[in-house]
Amino acid sequence: MSIHIAAKPGDIAEAVLLPGDPLRAQFIAETLLTDVHQYNQVRNMFGYTGLYQGKRVSVQGTGMGMPSLSIYVNELFRDFGVKRAIRIGTAGAIQENVQLRDIVIALAASTDSGINHIRFGGRSFAPAASFTLLKTAYERALSRGWQPKVGTVVSSDRFYTEDPAEWKLWAQFGCLAVEMECAELYTLAAKYQREALTLLTISDSLITHEQTSSEERQTAFTQMMEVALETAIS
Image (cartoon, rainbow, N blue to C red; front, side):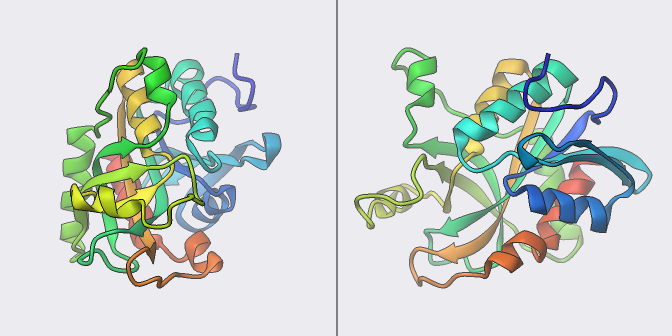
């Protein structure tokens, strides 16, 4: 039985978008979906199911960080039979060729989190995307004339770090951006044998210190949302 999602059997579609911000979930439901039903308000972590281009899709807020995302993704996979989960979030660029508002598709995720060290008894696990979803998302973005960046990202447990230059080591090894959830999503997809993908819009740059507003992060990154929806229903 799900503790944090108050949906009934059949309320949630097989494909789910996962924004961290529940207000982004609400924006997607009200702006991009039709015939919308809200199935979750527990802890104000909103969840909706509706139609996109005539096909069922759900959108569920997860909160920030891997522990919070883990709660919702475990329950979605285990209790509601979700087969495809696509995180749509924001990230900080750590490469010069990754600019504000670029779309990044996460091929795999490194992390500074101890979650998988605990899970695998000190061993390392390589959390990676579903190739099918990644290929679809990339092709959908190109078909719209957009140029997404594809590569590895860093899932950090900390938004504020003791060493403000810590990101430079990850950048040296080719990571494109820093976010806070992807590694756990990909790990849980592997555990439950489901498909998962992370699409990110660059909201700030650790190199130039540019940043977008909180309102823009909540509602204006519609390119990423549309690519995610088209990928989810494919």
